[in-house]
Image 1 (cartoon, rainbow, N blue to C red):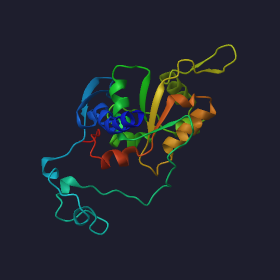
Image 2 (image 1 turned 180 degrees about the vertical axis):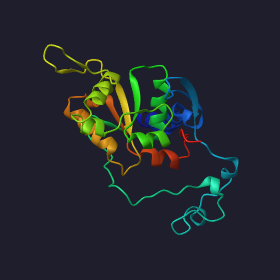
Image 3 (image 1 turned 60 degrees about the horizontal axis):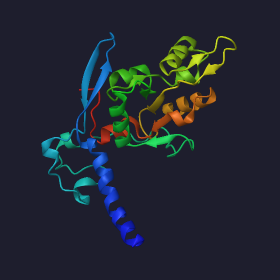
Image 4 (image 1 turned 30 degrees about the vertical axis):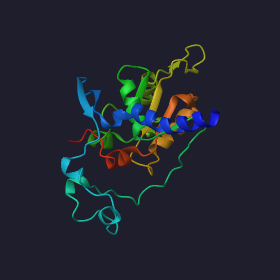
Length: 229
């Protein structure tokens, strides 16, 4: 009898999980703050043009040499530089959770009603300004890795992260540290990793850190909304 119920549970679990993550195919309204401090709303979703929905999935179409078949409409495919950086492991720390696109979407959705959560782009300012995930804030990794050279920016970032300095002994108080998800340009980009390493060095609780390893490259490859129109 137990075996029977166990099999039924196994069959139902994927369906329940798919229903829970169904927002991956829905639009999520994200609040963003512009450079002048004005609030604006963006819709984040998987952008799949109608013409792309009828593309057959087979080797001839998907893998024509190193590129998609020439018959695939340009709007349905993208190319990226893949020969830079170093590939990174799936897990940085046993207490740090590695995220995929659906987990990032779930985080973003909850973030809209939970001020203790922040999505962080660890890229340089010019890269962040060119394109990022809607709703992400910019905290360049070098502000943490070279914090003695960026003392003011580093202290401002700590405040945004809910970390405060004890006036008595100058130690850092992580009692109200926010839950954060950090990303950068792709699975070869080390900026998010260097920021996480710097946070761990100063004592930031690893259980409050999530890492989106795929970064912008994986985000765009999945057809997700970015700030660049």
